[in-house]
Amino acid sequence: MRKISLDRLDALFAAISKAYTLYIPTDTKAGAKFEKWHGEERLSDALNTVRSPKDFFFPQTENLMDFKVEGKNIEVIDTRSECGDFAVFGVRACDVKSFDILDRVFLSDPVDSYYKNRREHGVIISLACTKPAETCFCHTFGIDAASPEGDVVCHKTEDALYMEARSEKGEKLMSAVSDITEDADSAAVDAQKKLIEDRLAKLPLAELSADAFGDGKTSEFFNAPEWSELSEACLGCGTCTFVCPTCQCYDIKDFNTGHGVKRFRCWDSCMYSDFTKMSAGQPRLTQLERFRQRFMHKLVYYPTNNDGLFSCVGCGRCVAKCPIHMNIVKVMKKLGGSKNG
Ligand code: SF4
Ligand code: SF4
Image (cartoon, rainbow, N blue to C red; front, side, top):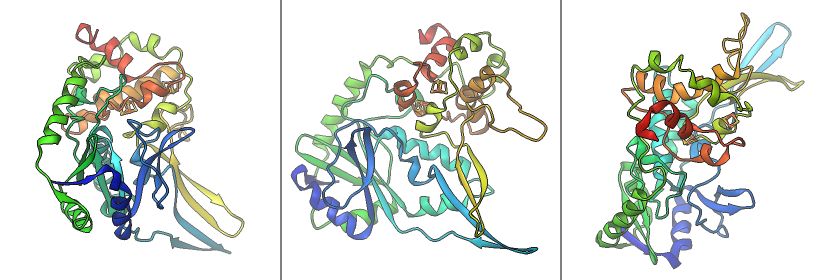
């Protein structure tokens, strides 16, 4: 394990920036946001960013390819380029876990080469959560906010940043900062972990359990009468899907620029009325069906198809952002029975 004094964070970021494009969470009027480090940006103290680091690997919009049309000839232009090495600092335990969920979607056959390219070049520098929020429930899904995963795992104490490489990519990054970091034992990190665990145990959602859900529960929950009340006020705004680190649905469209055609993809939301609309019609006609789809996918369908892994990481973003205060926690409490209150 290595450490660096907090008053030398700029030196650390400068050293990383020599080899990687570095992004760190910074404070903006709209909340914390990952921004490219140029030298002036200050590290945010916020627990988490409004938008998740998913954007670095699966951006909200991206050009997939161009078409040049001349008479009856169509030329396909591959617009992909190898991306440079980049590092994302300050990724929380929940968001690090979201990449396991996204990887199973985008790196399964057929592999999404756009996502793969970015995953191969991106280094995740995680940061343990010293002050988890009342909306946090990552522990419900077996995630430890005190011990995140990542290529490099960091703990920030009162006076120092402790860093430990956990992958080949992480080792490479740490070798780039070896001159400005020093060897450290784990005493301060162990003490901090204990403190975080005590705080986690006192959170309002500390007892929330996902045990009622998971593999093979489709018939138990699909026709539950509770969906009607739960979905009644849903606006179909899609906010919950757009802030979610694990939502991965997208649409693909062609845009005629007048000089050719650009094919792009953009995030979509299962909460939208035209989501998965086909020539034969719309498979989910009501907001109840769309609402149910989102939560059944996270709590039942995804784990059924992915060895029991849930596709929620308990980041709490949807809990904080839904304009009608509806969220996955309320769904789990309502459908999950007495154990969840
Ligand atoms: S469903 Fe909500 S709590 Fe779960 S990962 Fe998505 S935004 Fe976070
Ligand atoms: S659950 Fe909330 S955030 Fe999600 S679509 Fe409905 S109103 Fe919008």
